[in-house]
Length: 402
Image (tube, rainbow, N blue to C red):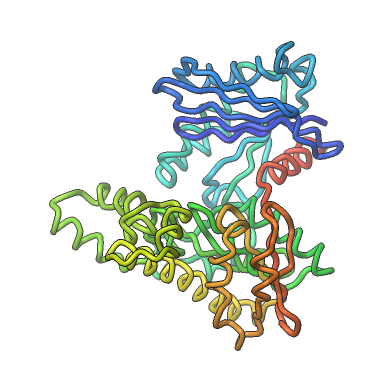
């Protein structure tokens, strides 16, 4: 079975065509700057093609994707009929969706009804689904939600906020969690490596970051909440913050709560504290240099705060789980940031988490690694995530059901 995985953003479409017989990626690419000017990148085998094109909407973008897959020059299949199913990544499933489902009109309408919870994402997801329905009307589509891994098992005492019933029932104010496909994929690999299901903490650390406490394969708690703003310090997101900061910001600036939300999401985090960049590599370059300046001090503080917040969540999730059998670092920073992993694990020895600094330093990028020192009670893994293969697996499972 060949599955086309589609991730539609507000101005982009990422895709992968995967042969699920061997879980091999046949082709992948990106349509970006949709509605602006447009660029299309397509990769297949050891080849790559990048062209500037007009991409006025998601429908045109998907036409380029499908044409590239069957083109004599760039194609990897002879006919679009070889695409057996399409798996769509959806950010927000709310309380409506507790599993991946086949697409029909009611599903699309339900996804649209959740737009207030993810205004930047849901409309784009629907545009991608509808483009595929038009171009491949007979190919089954499945929607896989970032939230489902959390909302399907998280207990009410973990996902509820201490607000009244109106806010909870009418406005949907509760914790949903995100990065679900990544947390599910990594926790499954952890169970394979550990030899059984257990008490795991998954650290998905990239430009957007979240932790997940997993017990026997089920999410018990996660750091992102009602939106992806809650939790860890991220590239440009503040993470946990006193809500009255919003009131203070609006009074001091004369701006609206919506503008404050943009500030907290786009101008804070590593970027806000360092004043340099939301990219960890840029901040580390200055922080670990010999530079003596206020800028360098701010970069060093940003890294300390960043690691401290992760460390604090690890400690709290060990309390939630009643211990921890293994911790995994994944995503861009988690997989590639040796200094970051060291900063997080240093000081956790009293909790049974002891990192081997040489193993950590020598861990190969993009590969599974074990980093715990001899005598560590907790396993420490680096596990490259693969959200696309998780979406493809879920898609196969749904379309295979009678």
